[in-house]
Image (cartoon, rainbow over all chains, first blue to last red; front, side, top):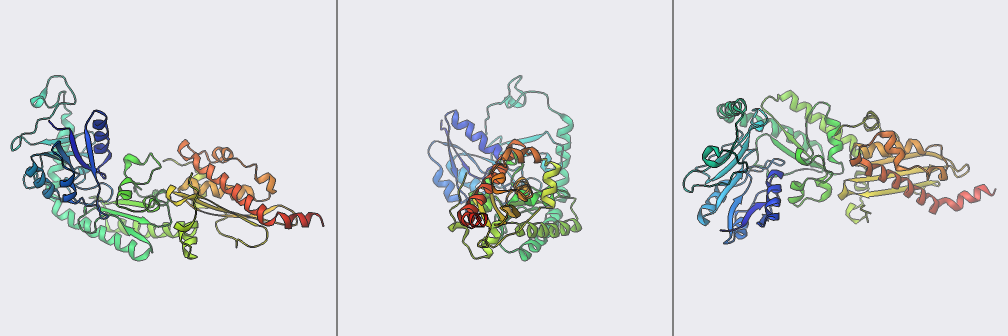
Length: 315
Length: 136
């Protein structure tokens, strides 16, 4: 029995923190890096696999930058090696095609509230054959569902989750096109009007509703403060917004720490209108312009000073 | 993050944003923080070399709303003070005035550092000129 897990540096904290815990319990975890566009190179995953590897866990699509991994290729690699493949499809489910058979997925986790369902319920897909995946229960007390878990389930939440998934299935194709169109428009408005604004993540292999941009010389939280009267944006994932650390996902792309401090994620949703997106675009331009006028870094850059040449006294 | 009304007010209506030419007589400049830490403050004072009073102050800040508010407030407080009085402004005064939460206390520390750096720069450049004015 092996004790080695291969995962990536940009997994959501729910994945990374579990791996950290497993490391404390004696597991070894390889955290593979990503390319500057956020894609995991399948060959890097292959090289990280050892004869002790029992699990490959790679997120389907990233929550901050929306980059969609080549899940099918990783699934194929896992099959070749006889390793169980888990994917965190929290962001992808209901937004893009997710097919456990075609993509060689053995375990898949997802949640209701990100597909417009009720909060408080999620699901773990467990492959029953070829291969049969056996999992140890986290909660004991009766051994329901063939011993995988115990306890009484919240039926209303599950029904809501199911119905939300059904609706996603019905509207996904149309919604994907519509949201990608709105997103591309927002991206164009911002990138064509703001100098030194950079798109984070892969320009094409990306969730249709996701847009992540770094605005050089302004700090992300201050941009949000200018927009948050009317919108709910984030400068990183909600899970890390209580910390002052810059986004570890943006940092993993090889961006400077300064640009990681300057990233904003725009997530569009089913009920957004073109007017709302236009409004957000215009407000973003105003806020970034105002903040740059009060940014000492922007002033230095305009004077031709290389910011990296300054001896900053980091605290 | 819930901001106090005062932080929101300084963020929306920052006082004294701008720059003085560094080499103008009586100008002291402080540049503190680091881009990779997510906070950089530039704070400048303009001292009247005849009276020794800080006539004007300006700032530019790269950072969160609390960092902007801390430096904006600092420029307000600096005006009308002597250099020695200005040196007594403490970060805890800023914390109390803006009701900064614990995770934002470093913003007030940075503002105090910026004040000290500007005062030091002023003294290094203009203390002689100021002493000459006094002895007249």
